Amino acid sequence: MDKAISPFQAAQSLTEFWSPRVIGELDDSYVKVARLKGQLTWHSHENEDELFYVLAGVLHIEMEENTVKVSPGEFFIVPKGVRHNPIADEECLVMLLERKTTLHTGNTVTNKTRSVEDQLRPL
Amino acid sequence: MDKAISPFQAAQSLTEFWSPRVIGELDDSYVKVARLKGQLTWHSHENEDELFYVLAGVLHIEMEENTVKVSPGEFFIVPKGVRHNPIADEECLVMLLERKTTLHTGNTVTNKTRSVEDQLRPL
Image 1 (tube, helix red, strand yellow):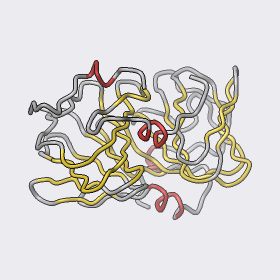
Image 2: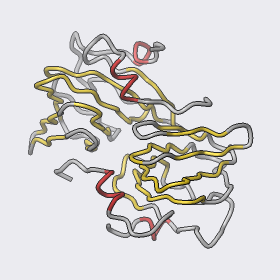
Image 3: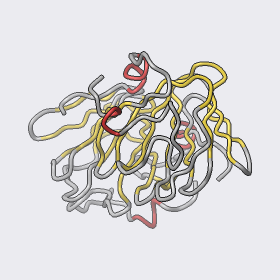
């Protein structure tokens, strides 16, 4: 790798919602981008924390105890084991940082669920 | 943690250059911010990749093979074992993502070197 990467540009190039794509590898973690609109699904990751960094738009991360609003230029880390549901009332672009073992929708499977292989397709 | 974090605001609040501070914990990694001006020192991290995300200003990451320019909203991952020297001609604010075991200036120690304990002081 010999060039810097713009996650905003990478996220903007996505054509599908809720379909994260890997844009970087950091030891045992992936940097991903995703384009969000609507809501994903309630799920949790038993063994991995998950970082959401908002590039554009507003993300609400609904959890059982509270809901956190994440504005552009802010991040929030969902601790392992915490059930959450990401919601974007309007279109939202995010950068994600999560371990390679993290399943897209955790222990829940819906028609939105993407495999790791799908997320590794080149942009 | 029940609120989103703005790394830009955290970095802006720093009073010292080249003195990273931890603002988040993600499994075995820390999210840090730093305020940079001038250059750090040539060093490498034998076992850890290191992610530099530029929040404001321009960072040049000098390496033995090439130099990468990182503009606001872009990131670059320095692979483990690669000698590098971060340079900011003008003031630059960055967010860093690195494993907790990562030493500030790797296998090099200078008067700029900060301990992990120092980086863990609350902002």
